[in-house]
Amino acid sequence: MIRKLLIANRGEIAVRIIRACREMGIATVAVYSEADEESLHTQLADEAICIGPGPSAQSYLNMEQIISATMVSGADAIHPGFGFLSENARFAELCEKCGITFVGPPSKVIRMLGNKKIARSTMIAAGVPVVPGSEGDVEDIETGLKEAERIGYPVIIKAALGGGGKGMRVANTPEEFPEAYATARKESEIAFGDGTMYIEHFVVNPRHIEFQILADSFGNVIHLGERDCSIQRNHQKMIEESPSAAVSPELREKMGHAAVTAAKAAGYVNAGTIEFLLEPDGKFWFMEMNTRIQVEHPVTEWVTGIDLVKEQLKIASGMPLEISQEDVRIQGHAIECRINAENPQKNFRPSPGTIQGAHFPGGNGIRVDTCVYNGCKIPPYYDSMLAKLIVHAGNRKEAIAKMQSALGEVIIDGIDTNIDYQYEILKDEDYQSGNFDTGFLASHIIAGVKINEN
Figure 1 (cartoon, rainbow, N blue to C red):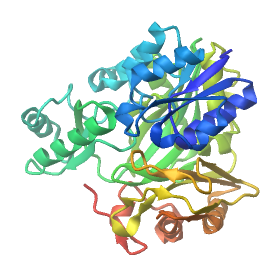
Figure 2: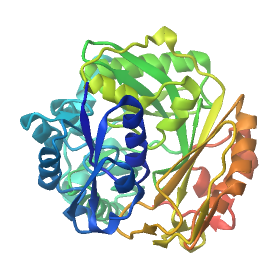
Figure 3: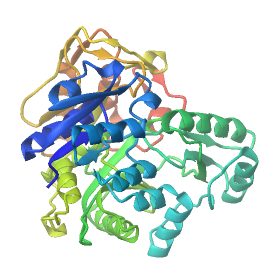
């Protein structure tokens, strides 16, 4: 079993991992930037090591510093969380070469799934339906224009490495392509330190459905049902739920089988997510596989009763899955709202600053994952997410009502947040009826805000 774990991340996911380790008797080491010296994860871990200045390129993306901190602390494993280096094959490979257990799939699997050409060919060979896309990396605008013409407009330009909705832009025409490509590439370079781009046909307004996968080193692979992540702005998820109102038991079985097939074809190990685009007629397309824990993993934990972070640590320790597909039961309905430090009325402008006061709800079926406390500072360098509010109830209608009540109790003073905006989404008739897709926010005026997707 892992004895001592270094968490190569920050914020609420670092706190989440530390708490799981406490329950399993695993010692923890936090790393932090100078801007995060007083952050909650540094205070909860058994040890904390500074790895550089505030900007992520000099701290949380600094592989050498993180590996050095691991060696100095005596940790025998690293959990990358999500974002930052979590899907970086070179970082996973460094861990392997240094004899450090990487809590995630092997570097060769991350590299393969990060290579869109190889990932696509692997899925096609396995019989998994795939969205038409570029045959390899798109290194410049001229190449991209040729690929887009071959694939057919509209197209989406995507970062080959990374996730979280960053490094993505849609081009509806050849005239829109150059600016969209340049913007997506620049954003990818800033967010992931890599400007490798990929293009695929843009399926207009599908549902974004993803399946949670668990796979051990002994060839056992199961899925834990789906999450509907269709409520998103500029490809960044805002509200997630499980199960999806658009997925019948028959479709769940079909998509789940495809997800397990995809994971097996990739030789996958640990927790991962297969992302699909679901069209109204029931056709679905493999989009990508995220080789890490997801922000929205708590909704799956609620409806299955399975602790995904603990499962990650057990698998990384070489243990076989103790859960079979027949053991997985979806119970009730769960919804997650991401509470961000941003102002929806000002084009979702980030709102760093000092938390002057904070209160979160509690009670039956309510969970809060956060790093926020009274007086804590929210730096300007990182993702704006402050907390995840998750509820669980007997059915979707009850879960929506519970989330509305819970959001109404949240107080975060000192900075702007999207709490009121989330509340208004939950009140919308189309959302309540389950009549929505990825174009929902762009086609609805919520709290007086009209989203301009780019």
